[in-house]
Length: 113
Image 1 (spheres, helix red, strand yellow):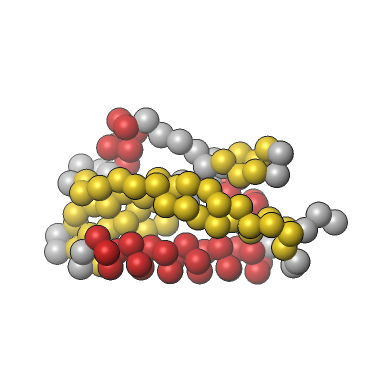
Image 2: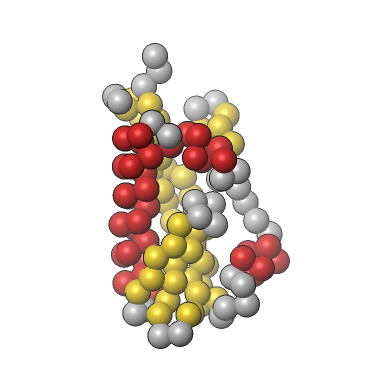
């Protein structure tokens, strides 16, 4: 599948303390990873996002998966779902939240046919 463009989209990532580990969780992608600290959790999260995007693009299911996760597509731009602070806290499931950041995720756009 030829790409015409790669779109950079900000995705909220929560860093949660779970036992001895730090979990990086992106509700908009329903992806998580973990590490011994925030730095290793972030690195593992970046790898998980990369694999997710590569595999869904390879299968031709990227757009369908994003739409199912609540993303919107308008004017050739994907927008992730957004949550209020209270909703994000509920997503943490009562685990201590260490940090919350917005990570740039590079979404490939397929060439128009």
